[in-house]
Length: 363
Length: 214
Image 1 (spheres, helix red, strand yellow):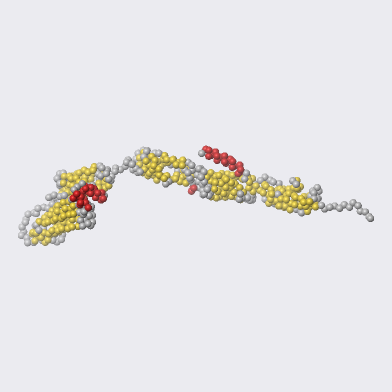
Image 2 (tube, helix red, strand yellow):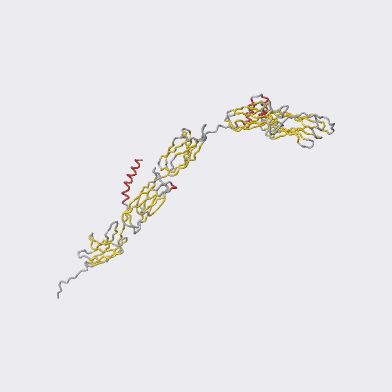
């Protein structure tokens, strides 16, 4: 999966400019900016932390951002995590801001932490880069500022579903879900309409706009290669709402085939010199209808013979003992493989006794 | 296949009469050799083969790598005389995938009477001499004494012993003479006769024809 992903990313980049192409073999790069306004005030004042993070050239692994604010007592008063980004999301320009009201005197700390997991700018597999800003809340309260602070961005909830979640290769399937205001209620979904949802699947990216009920959907075509793929939807956020993302998996697999039964018809006991007929019959497991003319492999001791189902293979019983027979059908587009372990054909002899000499003593 | 069967049949017919003539004496060791083959004529090695008289197993062996076997049987000294049918039997041997098979052969059991006798070395015309001896292999019967193919005396065998009286005829020439002691050959009895050598002497009779005085 990962090699494939890198290969298709490389192919996409190959079609782009040479300047971008050069980034293929380099480590990811990033920029982080964080600011707080104002940088100080009285207890009860609001302050807003703004963050912008860009990530370029991530080819493997994931990157994401965590954001938090701690009050002067060290308690966490805000926490949020960005979607996880992969090569498919490159380049990322992630912006967010949040506003808190200082209800304690002291230093309030807001931080952003960019985490690379799998491939990091420093060449390692994991790196965490943290930047922080501070808001000083003084106690010298003049009792002013009665206005409610402007609200910060609201958290959002994104749902995603794939239909059907098992898709034959090269067939289309739809991905849909809803975007909701998560600040409203835990038990009722308040839709966010008109938001842009970016959906990525196997190197393809599509966008959808949420409806009045918050719903969105896009259609993808499954690849020809069987496997389990991830579909990722993300909402980048806007002036009102925080960004969020969600993912689901889709299994690309050929439609299931019909079962069949393979039967070996052979005598259990024969005599030396007999011609032994072994017939391989293939049947539909459900209808028991015979399926003729399919290639089946007949095992006779250490030898294997390819014959057609329904046909008879003849061997000569040459020595007393046993012949081990079995049969296999490798399966085709219509039927699954089938195997009959078969069994043993016993070859007996009714021996002749030839008297060559009858005599006395040592004659 | 049919030709093969025919050939086998002809072979069996050719061999069977020859085998039927087999004659064994009591006390002899009879040997039977052969080959066990499957339907394609390949030897069957490692198979058990038995020699039976009726239901009695006389001997058993295992075939060699070439399917060959040799069975032997020492004919008991008291075995009934006459023709005997023996069976060569291959019992069923599941581990070898060999089914039971059998064939028969005929042998004749004979007795061999071996005589030993003795008599006086020197005999005379007119003597009544005794020829005594024993017969090995025969308890009872009749013993004959012959000279030159002519029976000159007979006597019974009792418990293998005999004692025959013979009056020496007056017309026998003098000199060495050979008496043959034999026995009446019954059915399935062979005789190994013996000879007794003697010398006929003349005990001259002196007849004085004249006595005269001088």
